[in-house]
Image (cartoon, rainbow, N blue to C red; front, side):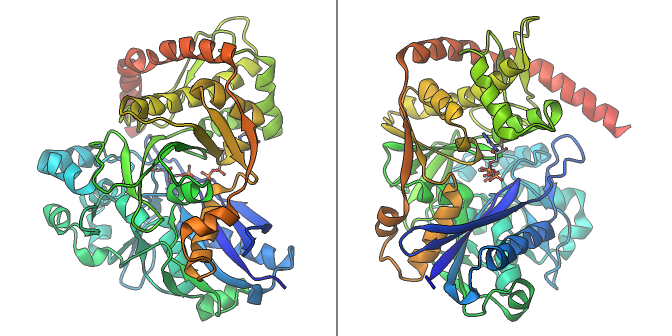
Length: 504
Ligand SMILES: Nc1ncnc2c1ncn2[C@@H]1O[C@H](COP(=O)(O)OP(=O)(O)O)[C@@H](O)[C@H]1O
Ligand SMILES: O=C(CO)[C@@H](O)[C@H](O)COP(=O)(O)O
């Protein structure tokens, strides 16, 4: 019986739990989906109990279907979808559905934060207070649901709620804490200045821990519920993008992470605390102690593809739909897609922009639309890489992770649009592997994250840029860049129309 750790990847579409040995071998993996609720334009919510139930089903399957012995599981750590607001009352009961990272209802609160604190806010947090982040959501609840805010005694992020239900202990790690935009990045503590400015009691904020810190054993209740042993230790864990970067071996500024999950992320390792992109890109504490990372986020990356499939090819196999894009051409026979279907975060921080297909022609087949979706998502990533390159960054390798990395065609498209070599992991589960690595280091199996990376991170395929395609994509990207300014006004008017009509 080999010892192992569990890496829990709490994503937006599903939870995936990976069991990994000290040799870095993934011996079993289970997962379960849960729903995303979008009751109004801009709203995105989940029920925190769905996360707990789905994770428990995955763990029970590991024990029953994959014959993992509870005594084998020495440690557990977590990778979590970022920024989501979970509010608990004095009895630690959930007060309302969690408001997620892609919930953009808090534009008013975002503007109020900037009006009150302006540049000082960016100086403290290294970020703009975008709708997706936790503080604007908290202020939305304060303003629109004052009775709930009055009852709130604790604020948690998604993975921290899950860990709380497994251990009975409250904690948040630094990488998720920066994503609340309530952390003072220089001081590495909750910013009293920000909390005072917006009337948030510090008691709402959970204790800060490092990602590799011990956060308590599985408690009696969760042991009974899941079959896990109370000897199993949990560790702080991290934001999913921090864990994805750990699991993908992004440990130097020349490697860049490209993650296609529900969201899309272009992420760079930042060794310096002082770096500040003034909120144009996000700046976060890493899950690696004393390191940082920056990133640009496309709100609807995998989500755009899933939306397309659900709407136009519901009954078909996901891989078949994606690979049908090979029947189309570079540039999808003159069809472009902009993936702004739930608004956008970077490079355009605009909650009311919406997506578009441009250039629809009577000759277009469904496979052209699929191709346009795949390419449009990567053009939006190209916009993010352009920001880094303008700042002087030079990348030699893109590591591709997330559900989108299941498709070799999509990775080749990335290599051609980025004009950089793209490598994939042996298992596309970067965040889950990163979470497992945090548990492995926390348990003392390795002295440092770097030691663990050498054993755990294994690359698989390499995709090299193809000269002809690169040139065509450069031309197409220039056309793509015109979509945002050309469609902004129309999109805003349509969103306003929808809001007015849905309010009636
Ligand atoms: N076979 C596939 N090929 C390409 N992309 C896929 C495939 N299957 C799923 N996806 C994409 O992966 C996304 C989910 O990725 P994942 O990393 O699991 O997301 P999350 O962590 O947000 O739950 C989906 O939105 C979907 O677009
Ligand atoms: O908001 C962000 C990062 O700032 C998102 O990247 C979320 O962290 C969700 O991640 P996925 O579910 O797409 O992995």
